[in-house]
Length: 329
Image (tube, rainbow, N blue to C red; front, top):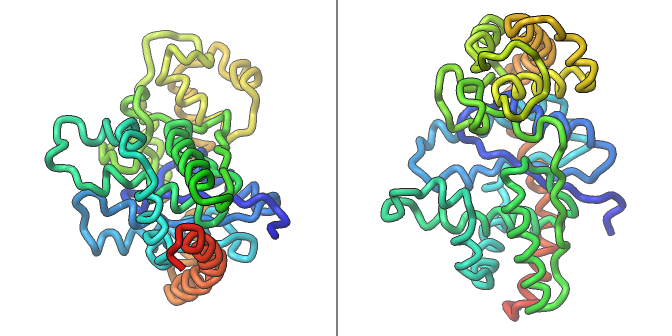
């Protein structure tokens, strides 16, 4: 029996982690390590639904794990593993696909966005990957799933799938709840603050990488889109300034009122400099720890093997229940 609520979450190893990933997910995982039974995953099988470079994928997986640890995830207080190291993920995904209506998948907004104008070329995996995401969550009987607000629909699909399976075959899965943070849950691109900051966007001034040096951070923020107004306030109708203030608020810990008072009478140059200061101060210890961890590659290998074995105990138990419920044992 679980003594704590179990949390499952993961990030695809496609592209480099940026400040939006840190604010929206990783720092909250770190803060919640003692509150929950944490199961965190590098979801590499979600990264192969489109054309990719296998060597680049391997490199990105290791960098992602190392950055998780450098950011403060404690391997003694959480489970941290790679999705493809636990074969139960894909087995459960197939079984859930057999009970998931196609109409549910056809309504997923991310598939519509990514396949627009090229449905003849996209892979079947892109269409069905929400079922794999549901399997990732349900395999560990997760109670909660921390997500950005743009991913809430996928957790809703996992909930619907769990409820449908339980109705068809008997109570088997925990029905998970999404956790969406009110501050910084969705950090937008510096070059286009109407679009979410994304690892897949390779624009030179789009995002702040967790491994960017201070000069690069200041340069990117100096080029961040703002507007022609003068007052620095939290106004969602002014997305560029709102995004910079959101980053500052998330990393400084100051309230909206304190921040607006701080920047009263100041200009956008002041705002960008102070946002850069707080970002650099936040990332400095992360980058130092990252350099330490990369000096011993065997540590990462051993940790991933140990943690995959740890979570497979949970995964195997769930799959035993699923197979029996479906008449496969």
